[in-house]
Amino acid sequence: MSSLPSPTIVTLTMNPALDITTEVDIVRPTDKLRCAAARYDPGGGGINVARIAHVLGASVSAVFPAGGHTGHLLTRLVHDAGVPLQQIEIAESTRESFTIDERSTGKQYRFVLPGPRLKFTDQAQCLEKLRGAGTSAQFVVASGSLPPGVPPDWYQRVADVCRSMGALLILDTSGGGLTHIKNGVFVLKTSLRELRECVGRELAMEAEQLAAAHELVDREIAQAVVVSLGSQGALLATPLHSQRFSAVPVRTVSGVGAGDAMVAAIVVGLSRSWTLTESVRFGIAAGAAMLLTPGTAACTREDVERFFGIVPAAEDVDAVHT
Picture 1: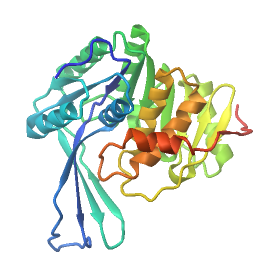
Picture 2: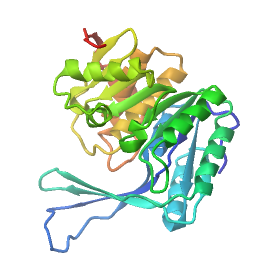
Picture 3: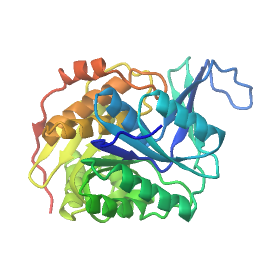
Picture 4: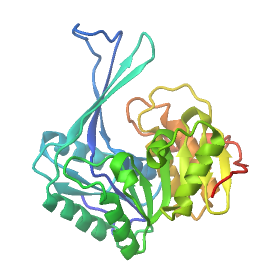
């Protein structure tokens, strides 16, 4: 279970999860709910990104802390998926995330636990593993929430490490991990909710959303910001451009991991020396393909490439920003 000698992409997942997915006819309070057989997938933002990047043929390695029985199973599932990995052994057990699909309505209920507390020594080992795995990498993807015990400026520390290694950082996070980043991000991917949290405004209109994204670029937090809008597609803000991307309509099986698949395809596109615009289109395709899979099962390369062929070209948008 070791990494490739020189992966092009390294992912960091500080709060991985063993994803458990099941289904039931109706979700009712108090009653015992007789569920179908459970599906187990390795989860957490960076791990999901690594799995999809591997499916798309990229050279990738995953770095993450894991402990206890759930951590052992998570690590085995990542290994079985063919993804080279660097695990940091921790004392507390890796968290579980639980998803219930309600057959009668098609609704999905997701229960996400906070995760184990990481000691200072655990955190130091994570950075050390990242330095070792990412020495020759072109891109580092840091994705997901921060577990208890990890300071909110953690991803700024990661950005500083990436700068020292000469790797470009793609960041996808929320909460304090997002609001405490000050500089050093190459591409910042946010949802609309996360962008609102970051700038502290409602952002009801597209022009406001693009202005907020450009604000982060102008403050030199990131060189580019991708705002995922779900079924409405995505927006891209760079110092010179504002672009709108349409989504590919699909019948959703599960929305879990679609954003991670988008990030994976974006970084894979960039690793192929594609433009950021084409890479975001590839990300739209991967996000759509991920919607077809149960739980956090990986999408197929064939589906991603099929959708990529029908993703509309990006539209240039006039954006007002300061």
